[in-house]
Every structure is written in structure tokens, then in C-alpha cells.
Length: 280
Image 1 (cartoon, helix red, strand yellow):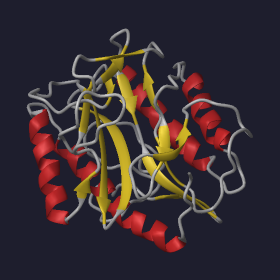
Image 2: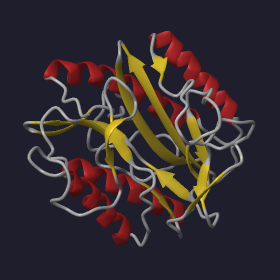
Image 3: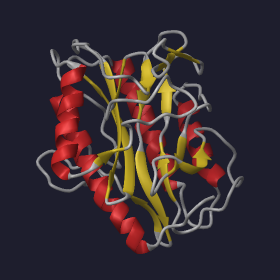
């Protein structure tokens, strides 16, 4: 069942979204050569506790995965793209790191992700991250009231294909609000003008993720970490948005460097990453 949110409820989700966006921007700045993934995880735990928020990941136990998830971040490095378990790994020069987090404040949830390069960037990695960010922007732009869910999926897929990347449709975006995963599923590939109507009050997480040279994935033995099947590098970008009568509203915008609120035309100037036009 899809629950449309009121303007007041969207506003409450935006409070959570601001926290999630600010913490992701902070984490992208903390990530550096020589930093352990465990340190990033504990940094996030500390910030979540200080804010009085709750992690949506802690004790999460979906049909996939092995046992409840006991972390507040998904940290995926290089060929890992989704659900990476924080573990004892020290970031190296040139690593491509994806950081994904979801949190709740006062019963309302927001979910977001970004990818950055630690240290010296490889141009091919910059292109890959850029593709996910441009696809995210295209998906958000397509989330117009009166449109169709397929408009979002088609926009994401079109960007992926224009960059020469395939699209895996096994995991994608999702509804969000009182819980992290709600209906509907938002595929990263699809046909425009198909699917459910986009009514004002719909809140969804849009999350394009691509692998450099395959659309196939494999799971680690931990049951959580998802990698490209051929070992190629991967990237992931995500925002929580609301469909409103005046158009899509991004709820998890991240602050620009030296700012306290997100500028929708810029990204934080932290670790190496392409410039995104929606704070992706």
C-alpha cells in the first residue's frame, strides 16, 4: 500500500533529510587515505546518537542478507556497490568509496548515498560517478506530478546507456516515509509513460547505481555486500524526494563547502568527485 504524505509530513521528512545530507557530506570529508572503514562507521554512530536519531540499518533483516545488519552505514569499496559491511579496511589512494545511510527522526525517515574517490582520481572512476549523479538528477527531474513511475526509470536508464553502462534492475529505488522501504519499487531502467501515476505526496528514494563494464552482480559470503560480477568498479548516488504539486522536492540535499544548507547547483568540495547539479 502506498501512503501519500501531507505537506506537514513531508516537512518532517525534510528535517531528517537535512540531517542525513549533512552527515553524508561530513563523512565524505572524513574519508581519506589511511582512514579505516570502522572509523567512518563509529563516526556516524556518534553523530546519530548526538542528534537523537535512529539508524534504519541497525537490526535490518530483509529476505536477502545474512542475519540482522549491525551497522549504521553501508560502505562499499571499488567493485562493491551496495550493502557493503563496514570492516577492518584502511582506505588506499585511488579507492572509490560509496557511502549509504538512512536514519529516522521522530518517526520519519530519509535515505541517501554518494560515491567519492579517495586520493588520486582515475578519470574512468570520475566518469562513472558522474553518470550516477546525472542519472539521479534526470530521475528527479522526471518525478513530475501527473507523470508516471516509468518516467523516472526511463530517465535513469537513458543516462546510463548514454555513458555506455548497462543497468541492473534487481535493486533500485523505493518508497520511503515512516519506514525505510515502502512501495513502490523504483527501477533504474524502464519505459516512459508506464507504471503508477505520480501523485503529490508520494515520497521515494531514487538511487541509480552502475558498474563500469557489466550489469551482473554477485554477493559476498557475508550475504550482504553486492559486487560487480566481473570485478569492475561501481558507483551509487541516491536522494530522498517528494513529489509535490509544484514539482519534485529533494529532501536530502547536502550542504556545499562552507555552507549550512544545500545549494542545488553544487556538491560539497570534499573528496574527489564530479560536480553534480543537484547536490548529489
